Length: 143
Image (cartoon, rainbow, N blue to C red; front, side, top):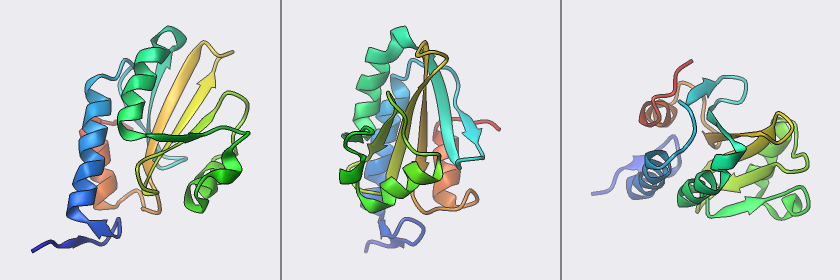
C-alpha cells in the first residue's frame, strides 16, 4: 500500500524519484559545501566559473527544465512565484524546475560572472517540514 506524503502532496515513489535525482546531482557536484539559505528557505552552493560545465551537467540530473528572463513567462505559475519572491531573474540567471513543479532551482552568477550559486528548494514547504530536513541532510547543508 502506498502512503501519501502530505507535505509534498505526492506519493512516496515520486518523492523518492526527486531525492534519487538530487543524489545524482550531489554525487558529482563540483562546488563547495552546501549551506542553508534561510532568506529563501533553500540550500545553496557556489562554484567558480571554470566548473560551470560540470555543475550544469550535475544540475541537469535533477532539473531537466529551465527558464531565463526571456522565457520566464512560460514557466509554471508555482515556479514563477518562487522567482518573483526571490527578487526576479536578471540577465544570466536561470530558474530551474524538476520533472514536476515541486522541485525548484535558482542558478545565479555573481562576482562579475566569476562565480555561480545554485540554490535548491521544495515548493510550498516550511523550513521545519520533514522533506526540507531530508533535503538539508542529503546535502549536509549547514546554517
